[in-house]
Each structure stands twice: as C-alpha cells, then as structure tokens.
Length: 432
Image (cartoon, rainbow, N blue to C red):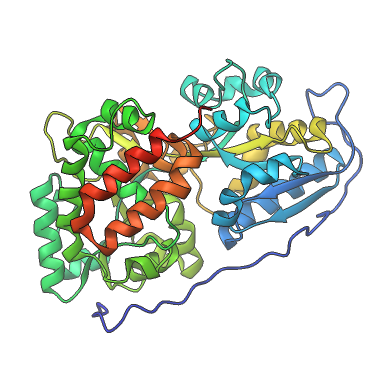
C-alpha cells in the first residue's frame, strides 16, 4: 500500500563507527605485486562516511590490503558533511596518510595548495585499467595526478517501480518538462509528495540547481558560471530559479529540516514518487531489504530546452588521495594503488554492496537492473559534470551558495536579491 502523507518525521539509520578503529588485522609481510621494494609500516586511512554500506566496502578493502601487504592500517571514519567542511584544516594539520575524496575541481584546489601528494607513479602502474576520462578527472592543473578513482554514480530522478505501477504512471515516459509536471500533479492528486527534497546539509539542493541550469542553459554556461566566467545575475540564472519554483508545490514542505537521508526515507516509505539524488544511496535501500533495492529505478532528469536535450549529467567520481602532510606517504600511495587495482576493487565488490567501479575490469554483465539503469543514464549524456560543490571553489560552494539556496527556500520571491548577493560575494573572493 502507498503511505499517504501523515507527517514528515523519519528515522535516521546511521551506523556510527568509532574513530581510529585501528588495525583490522595483520598478515605476513607479503610484498604487493609490482612493488620493488614494497612500502612498509603502519598508516592511517580517513573515510568520509559512517554509513553502513560504504563502511562495509572500505573495511573489506583495508582488510584485503593488510592481508596482502602486512601493513597495519588505522581506520578513521568521519560523517561526510563534517569531513568535507573541515578538510582544509585537516590537510594543513596532521591528516591521515590517505583519505577518501573527490575528483575534479575539489581535488585540484587542494593540489594547487601543495596539500596532496603527487601519485603519477601510481597511474604509471595501474592507469591502463582506466579510461582517459578518469585520468583527466584525476589530474591537477600542473598535469600531475593526485587522485585514484573508486566509483561513480549519476544524479537523476529515482523512483520505486512498484509504486508507479500501483498509481498507473509510466515513469520511463517522463521525457520533458511537461511530462514531469504532469506526473508530479498526478502524484499530488494521490495525496503523495511528488518530489522528495532536502537541504538541511546545505548541499543536497545543489544537484537540482545543477541539472536545471544544464537543461535550460547548457553544459558550457553551467561550467562557466561555476568558474566565474558568467554572472549569477544573468537572466539565464533567473530562469533556472523560475523553473525551480515550479517544483516547490510538489515537494515536501520541510526541505530545510531534512538531510539527504531524511528525503530518501520519504521514497523508501512510499510517501514520495520521485527523489532527485545521486544513485549512491542504493546501498541504503539494500540495507533495508533486497526487495526494496530491487524496486529502485532511475531515469534522467527531463529535457527542458530542446537545444540541450538530456545531454548533461552530474556523475561525481569518488576515490582516494594521499595527504602531503601525512606521516607515511609511501604506504599511503601503496594503499591507493591497491585500492585502484582490480584486486582491491574486487575486495569491495565481494561485499555484495552495489558499486559501479571506475575500473574497466569490473564485469558489467553482472550489473543488476538498477546498475544497468544508471549506466543508461550515463550513456545518454554527452557531458559529465562532477557536482556543484565539486565544480566550483570550495570557499564559495559551502559557505556561500549553500546558505543562499537555503534562504531561497524560505523566500523564493527573493531570487534577485540572492543572486545579487552571490555575485558580489564571488567578486569579493581572494585570488586563489
């Protein structure tokens, strides 16, 4: 049965891992294949998640590396928002030797400050297992590599197949803006939330802005805006907010009270028809039950401007970096080499937690229906963006754009003032 809306309180299921859950076991001091000599000694790994599914993958990776190398690894987990918001101070202090991070601009920003270790030699060893696009995303402005990919995931409209069948909606027929508004109207008429939304974390709504901007104004305008080559006061940006405001009547009213997992619960509990988010949350559905996971599906965000169609998708690339200020960079590089090699990838895949690996060695014939749908979203796109808070300056995204979008949710009539403020704050940023 569909769960009619009787309130928006949801339970959060966060498995908090203790910080510094050191050494997950030490095997014999076996040398890693291809390392001569092998890097040795203890190291620490910083995970930017405390959620159950990715923690299973990362702990399996650490255990496999320890068994292979004999190097003890201290596993330090931090909640994602806290990790991201404090990374600059973290890297300038006494960071873990290697840590989870993001490709693209966010990696380049810290590499330019000398806070990341050059891992070009790692790419010399394992680069043949990756496509050129992933190497480009791992490359700093100086042409060196500072990142090894783990996995990717697209952003799109997620829904439950059984729910749409019960309502009588064909979600896969939602191709353009009119189709989407019609579907949202039907869902609201059924007493349901059309589009689950959250922005308490200050980043969740950025994905909606990204896709609206790309659909309306195209890939190039979007990346130019985030790089400061276009103005936030441009009428084309105002058009993005005009379309965004059309979605508000179909969203839950407590957007600013929910973080991403709260909005996810609305879809999980069949209170919402669609959820605009990155597909990484599929593991959370699987934690609930295999049946819930098998019910999950994704389609691209609809076309708005026929000139651009559905040619762009946010598909963030997650992976690993080595901290320049860590205590054992040689073992940190050894670890991310193992993590990027198919042997390390397989250790994560063997947990059974769904993952779309960036490594070309992953057997796509084993993809389940949800993974196949994610691949289809990727395959349709001509342009790949990372995500707003990865594709612009971090000192602009989190502290400036995040609160600005939250202010807009409180008063959508203030669009012009908010955009004027965004532009003036961009103009006031110190040169990098």
